Amino acid sequence: MQVKADTRVLGIIGNPLGHSLSPQMHNRALEHLRLNYVYVPFVVDNHALKEAVDGIRALGIDGVNVTIPFKEAVIGYLDDLSEEARWCGAANVVKNCGGKLVGYNTDGAGFMASLQEQGVLPGGQRVVVLGAGGAARAITYHLVQAEVESLVLINRSVDRAEALAGELEAIGDVPVKAVGWERACLQEAIEEADLLINTTSIGMYPWIREMPPLDPEWFHPGLVVCDIVYNPIQTRLLMEASMRGLKTVNGVGMFVHQGALAFQLLTGVAAPLEVMREVVIHLLTEGNAEG
Image (cartoon, rainbow, N blue to C red; front, side, top):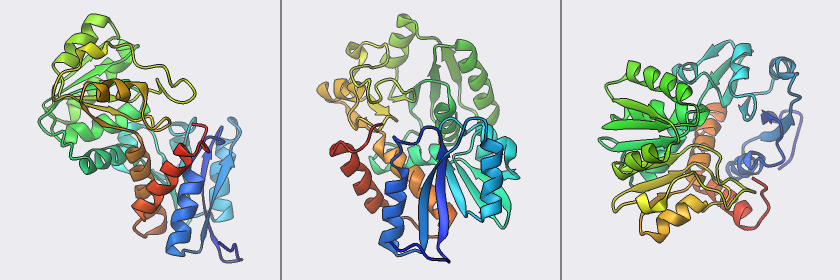
Protein backbone atom coordinates (compact mmCIF):
# COMPACT_ATOMS: atom_id res chain seq x y z
CA MET A 1 0.00 0.00 0.00
CA GLN A 2 1.42 3.37 -1.05
CA VAL A 3 0.19 6.54 0.64
CA LYS A 4 0.17 9.40 -1.88
CA ALA A 5 -1.06 12.98 -1.96
CA ASP A 6 -4.47 11.87 -3.18
CA THR A 7 -4.85 8.92 -0.81
CA ARG A 8 -8.15 9.10 1.05
CA VAL A 9 -8.30 8.58 4.78
CA LEU A 10 -10.57 6.39 6.88
CA GLY A 11 -10.10 5.49 10.50
CA ILE A 12 -11.39 4.49 13.89
CA ILE A 13 -11.75 6.68 16.98
CA GLY A 14 -11.79 5.31 20.49
CA ASN A 15 -9.76 4.96 23.68
CA PRO A 16 -7.98 2.60 24.08
CA LEU A 17 -7.38 1.16 20.61
CA GLY A 18 -4.47 -1.21 21.21
CA HIS A 19 -6.89 -4.13 21.15
CA SER A 20 -8.72 -3.16 17.94
CA LEU A 21 -8.54 -5.44 14.92
CA SER A 22 -10.28 -2.89 12.68
CA PRO A 23 -7.13 -1.27 11.20
CA GLN A 24 -5.68 -4.61 10.08
CA MET A 25 -9.04 -5.85 8.80
CA HIS A 26 -9.91 -2.71 6.83
CA ASN A 27 -6.44 -2.06 5.44
CA ARG A 28 -6.24 -5.64 4.17
CA ALA A 29 -9.65 -5.21 2.50
CA LEU A 30 -8.59 -1.91 0.91
CA GLU A 31 -5.35 -3.47 -0.31
CA HIS A 32 -7.20 -6.48 -1.71
CA LEU A 33 -9.51 -4.22 -3.74
CA ARG A 34 -6.63 -1.86 -4.67
CA LEU A 35 -8.53 1.15 -3.38
CA ASN A 36 -6.55 4.33 -2.78
CA TYR A 37 -7.39 4.60 0.93
CA VAL A 38 -5.59 4.18 4.21
CA TYR A 39 -7.31 3.26 7.49
CA VAL A 40 -5.78 4.83 10.60
CA PRO A 41 -6.40 4.34 14.35
CA PHE A 42 -7.03 7.65 16.15
CA VAL A 43 -6.75 7.43 19.93
CA VAL A 44 -8.89 10.29 21.23
CA ASP A 45 -8.62 11.76 24.71
CA ASN A 46 -11.86 11.24 26.61
CA HIS A 47 -12.34 15.03 26.86
CA ALA A 48 -11.48 15.82 23.24
CA LEU A 49 -14.26 14.11 21.31
CA LYS A 50 -15.72 17.34 19.92
CA GLU A 51 -12.31 18.40 18.62
CA ALA A 52 -11.81 14.97 17.06
CA VAL A 53 -15.15 15.14 15.26
CA ASP A 54 -14.36 18.66 14.05
CA GLY A 55 -11.08 17.24 12.77
CA ILE A 56 -12.94 14.81 10.53
CA ARG A 57 -14.43 17.79 8.72
CA ALA A 58 -11.32 19.96 8.79
CA LEU A 59 -8.98 17.26 7.48
CA GLY A 60 -11.41 15.88 4.91
CA ILE A 61 -11.39 12.39 6.41
CA ASP A 62 -13.96 10.32 4.51
CA GLY A 63 -15.29 8.62 7.61
CA VAL A 64 -14.50 6.69 10.77
CA ASN A 65 -15.65 3.79 12.84
CA VAL A 66 -16.45 4.65 16.45
CA THR A 67 -15.77 2.37 19.38
CA ILE A 68 -15.65 2.46 23.18
CA PRO A 69 -16.25 4.86 24.87
CA PHE A 70 -17.63 7.21 22.22
CA LYS A 71 -20.51 5.40 20.44
CA GLU A 72 -23.18 7.26 22.41
CA ALA A 73 -21.43 10.56 23.03
CA VAL A 74 -20.47 11.08 19.39
CA ILE A 75 -24.07 11.56 18.24
CA GLY A 76 -24.22 14.94 19.97
CA TYR A 77 -21.63 16.29 17.51
CA LEU A 78 -23.09 14.92 14.27
CA ASP A 79 -25.30 16.63 11.71
CA ASP A 80 -27.65 13.74 11.07
CA LEU A 81 -28.32 10.12 12.04
CA SER A 82 -29.74 7.06 10.34
CA GLU A 83 -33.06 5.91 11.76
CA GLU A 84 -31.37 2.98 13.47
CA ALA A 85 -28.58 5.06 15.02
CA ARG A 86 -31.16 7.54 16.30
CA TRP A 87 -33.23 4.77 17.90
CA CYS A 88 -30.19 3.07 19.42
CA GLY A 89 -28.79 6.37 20.67
CA ALA A 90 -25.39 5.29 19.39
CA ALA A 91 -23.33 5.38 16.21
CA ASN A 92 -20.43 3.10 15.32
CA VAL A 93 -19.88 4.69 11.91
CA VAL A 94 -19.56 8.36 10.93
CA LYS A 95 -19.56 9.25 7.24
CA ASN A 96 -18.33 12.61 5.96
CA CYS A 97 -20.73 13.67 3.21
CA GLY A 98 -19.07 16.81 1.89
CA GLY A 99 -18.65 18.26 5.38
CA LYS A 100 -21.97 16.92 6.70
CA LEU A 101 -21.33 14.17 9.24
CA VAL A 102 -23.89 11.37 9.36
CA GLY A 103 -23.94 8.63 11.99
CA TYR A 104 -24.92 5.01 11.38
CA ASN A 105 -25.14 1.87 13.48
CA THR A 106 -24.16 -1.41 11.81
CA ASP A 107 -23.92 -3.59 14.94
CA GLY A 108 -27.43 -5.02 14.84
CA ALA A 109 -27.42 -5.69 11.11
CA GLY A 110 -23.98 -7.28 11.47
CA PHE A 111 -25.29 -9.62 14.16
CA MET A 112 -28.30 -10.64 12.08
CA ALA A 113 -26.06 -11.35 9.09
CA SER A 114 -23.89 -13.56 11.28
CA LEU A 115 -26.96 -15.57 12.31
CA GLN A 116 -28.16 -15.92 8.74
CA GLU A 117 -24.85 -17.27 7.47
CA GLN A 118 -25.04 -19.94 10.18
CA GLY A 119 -28.56 -20.89 9.15
CA VAL A 120 -30.17 -19.39 12.27
CA LEU A 121 -33.44 -17.62 11.51
CA PRO A 122 -34.79 -15.87 14.62
CA GLY A 123 -38.27 -15.13 13.26
CA GLY A 124 -40.89 -16.89 15.37
CA GLN A 125 -38.31 -17.90 17.99
CA ARG A 126 -38.35 -17.36 21.76
CA VAL A 127 -35.23 -15.31 22.43
CA VAL A 128 -33.35 -14.56 25.65
CA VAL A 129 -30.85 -11.69 25.61
CA LEU A 130 -28.27 -11.27 28.36
CA GLY A 131 -27.53 -7.57 28.84
CA ALA A 132 -29.35 -4.33 28.08
CA GLY A 133 -26.51 -2.06 26.94
CA GLY A 134 -25.65 -0.58 23.57
CA ALA A 135 -25.07 -3.89 21.80
CA ALA A 136 -28.31 -5.28 23.18
CA ARG A 137 -30.21 -2.23 21.92
CA ALA A 138 -28.86 -2.64 18.40
CA ILE A 139 -29.49 -6.39 18.32
CA THR A 140 -32.98 -6.35 19.85
CA TYR A 141 -34.04 -3.58 17.44
CA HIS A 142 -33.44 -6.05 14.61
CA LEU A 143 -34.94 -9.00 16.48
CA VAL A 144 -38.21 -7.09 16.79
CA GLN A 145 -38.09 -6.29 13.06
CA ALA A 146 -37.56 -10.01 12.42
CA GLU A 147 -40.78 -10.75 14.38
CA VAL A 148 -39.42 -13.12 17.00
CA GLU A 149 -42.14 -14.78 19.08
CA SER A 150 -40.96 -13.25 22.35
CA LEU A 151 -38.01 -11.52 24.00
CA VAL A 152 -36.68 -11.81 27.54
CA LEU A 153 -34.08 -9.24 28.59
CA ILE A 154 -31.91 -10.27 31.54
CA ASN A 155 -29.79 -7.55 33.11
CA ARG A 156 -28.24 -6.70 36.45
CA SER A 157 -30.09 -3.40 36.41
CA VAL A 158 -33.73 -4.41 35.95
CA ASP A 159 -34.71 -0.76 35.51
CA ARG A 160 -32.50 -0.48 32.44
CA ALA A 161 -33.91 -3.69 30.98
CA GLU A 162 -37.47 -2.51 31.66
CA ALA A 163 -36.81 0.79 29.91
CA LEU A 164 -35.48 -1.03 26.84
CA ALA A 165 -38.41 -3.46 26.92
CA GLY A 166 -40.85 -0.56 26.82
CA GLU A 167 -39.09 1.01 23.84
CA LEU A 168 -39.05 -2.29 21.95
CA GLU A 169 -42.74 -2.98 22.52
CA ALA A 170 -43.47 0.50 21.14
CA ILE A 171 -41.93 -0.34 17.76
CA GLY A 172 -43.36 -3.82 17.21
CA ASP A 173 -45.84 -6.47 18.26
CA VAL A 174 -43.31 -8.62 20.13
CA PRO A 175 -43.93 -9.20 23.86
CA VAL A 176 -40.83 -8.21 25.82
CA LYS A 177 -40.15 -9.17 29.44
CA ALA A 178 -37.39 -7.71 31.62
CA VAL A 179 -35.92 -9.63 34.56
CA GLY A 180 -32.84 -9.55 36.79
CA TRP A 181 -29.97 -12.00 37.18
CA GLU A 182 -31.79 -14.04 39.84
CA ARG A 183 -31.17 -17.76 39.40
CA ALA A 184 -34.84 -18.72 39.16
CA CYS A 185 -35.50 -16.08 36.49
CA LEU A 186 -32.51 -17.20 34.45
CA GLN A 187 -33.45 -20.86 34.64
CA GLU A 188 -37.06 -20.33 33.60
CA ALA A 189 -36.12 -18.08 30.70
CA ILE A 190 -33.38 -20.36 29.32
CA GLU A 191 -35.41 -23.55 29.67
CA GLU A 192 -38.16 -21.97 27.56
CA ALA A 193 -35.84 -20.34 24.97
CA ASP A 194 -35.00 -21.27 21.39
CA LEU A 195 -32.16 -18.75 21.14
CA LEU A 196 -29.82 -17.43 23.86
CA ILE A 197 -27.68 -14.37 23.09
CA ASN A 198 -24.95 -12.98 25.34
CA THR A 199 -24.42 -9.27 24.60
CA THR A 200 -22.31 -8.62 27.71
CA SER A 201 -18.50 -8.63 27.87
CA ILE A 202 -18.44 -11.55 30.33
CA GLY A 203 -15.85 -14.06 29.12
CA MET A 204 -13.91 -11.59 27.00
CA TYR A 205 -10.11 -11.78 26.93
CA PRO A 206 -8.31 -11.81 29.34
CA TRP A 207 -11.16 -13.08 31.58
CA ILE A 208 -11.66 -16.18 29.46
CA ARG A 209 -12.65 -18.46 32.35
CA GLU A 210 -15.70 -16.37 33.18
CA MET A 211 -19.22 -16.88 31.89
CA PRO A 212 -22.65 -15.41 32.67
CA PRO A 213 -24.11 -16.62 36.00
CA LEU A 214 -26.17 -19.43 34.57
CA ASP A 215 -26.10 -23.22 34.90
CA PRO A 216 -25.30 -25.09 31.68
CA GLU A 217 -27.55 -27.87 32.96
CA TRP A 218 -30.43 -25.61 31.92
CA PHE A 219 -29.41 -25.98 28.28
CA HIS A 220 -31.73 -28.23 26.30
CA PRO A 221 -31.80 -29.84 22.85
CA GLY A 222 -32.63 -27.35 20.12
CA LEU A 223 -31.32 -24.30 21.98
CA VAL A 224 -28.94 -22.12 19.91
CA VAL A 225 -26.35 -20.21 21.95
CA CYS A 226 -24.73 -17.02 20.61
CA ASP A 227 -21.99 -14.87 22.11
CA ILE A 228 -21.02 -11.52 20.60
CA VAL A 229 -17.60 -11.72 22.29
CA TYR A 230 -15.07 -12.52 19.54
CA ASN A 231 -11.88 -12.86 21.58
CA PRO A 232 -11.61 -15.67 22.48
CA ILE A 233 -13.35 -17.12 19.43
CA GLN A 234 -14.79 -19.86 21.64
CA THR A 235 -15.89 -18.36 24.95
CA ARG A 236 -16.54 -20.55 27.97
CA LEU A 237 -20.28 -20.08 27.42
CA LEU A 238 -19.98 -21.45 23.89
CA MET A 239 -17.74 -24.31 25.02
CA GLU A 240 -20.31 -25.37 27.61
CA ALA A 241 -23.02 -25.30 24.94
CA SER A 242 -20.88 -27.20 22.42
CA MET A 243 -20.10 -29.90 24.99
CA ARG A 244 -23.85 -30.52 25.21
CA GLY A 245 -24.20 -30.81 21.46
CA LEU A 246 -25.85 -27.44 20.90
CA LYS A 247 -25.40 -25.20 17.88
CA THR A 248 -23.32 -22.11 18.70
CA VAL A 249 -22.57 -18.82 16.97
CA ASN A 250 -19.44 -16.92 18.01
CA GLY A 251 -18.78 -13.19 17.81
CA VAL A 252 -16.40 -13.21 14.85
CA GLY A 253 -19.25 -13.15 12.33
CA MET A 254 -20.87 -10.11 13.91
CA PHE A 255 -17.55 -8.25 14.07
CA VAL A 256 -16.72 -8.99 10.43
CA HIS A 257 -20.21 -8.27 9.10
CA GLN A 258 -20.59 -4.96 10.96
CA GLY A 259 -17.17 -4.00 9.61
CA ALA A 260 -18.14 -5.00 6.08
CA LEU A 261 -21.31 -2.90 6.26
CA ALA A 262 -19.26 0.06 7.52
CA PHE A 263 -16.70 -0.50 4.72
CA GLN A 264 -19.41 -0.28 2.06
CA LEU A 265 -20.97 2.80 3.68
CA LEU A 266 -17.66 4.65 3.70
CA THR A 267 -16.20 3.56 0.35
CA GLY A 268 -19.29 2.81 -1.73
CA VAL A 269 -17.72 -0.54 -2.63
CA ALA A 270 -18.88 -3.97 -1.50
CA ALA A 271 -16.50 -5.35 1.11
CA PRO A 272 -14.42 -8.52 0.52
CA LEU A 273 -16.07 -10.33 3.42
CA GLU A 274 -13.98 -13.50 3.37
CA VAL A 275 -10.73 -11.55 3.15
CA MET A 276 -11.75 -9.59 6.23
CA ARG A 277 -12.78 -12.73 8.08
CA GLU A 278 -9.46 -14.42 7.26
CA VAL A 279 -7.50 -11.50 8.73
CA VAL A 280 -9.53 -11.49 11.96
CA ILE A 281 -9.31 -15.25 12.50
CA HIS A 282 -5.58 -15.20 11.78
CA LEU A 283 -4.97 -12.45 14.31
CA LEU A 284 -7.07 -14.18 16.96
CA THR A 285 -5.62 -17.65 16.47
CA GLU A 286 -2.02 -16.50 16.13
CA GLY A 287 -2.22 -14.59 19.41
CA ASN A 288 -1.65 -11.17 17.82
CA ALA A 289 -4.81 -9.65 19.27
CA GLU A 290 -5.27 -8.56 22.85
CA GLY A 291 -9.04 -8.36 22.94
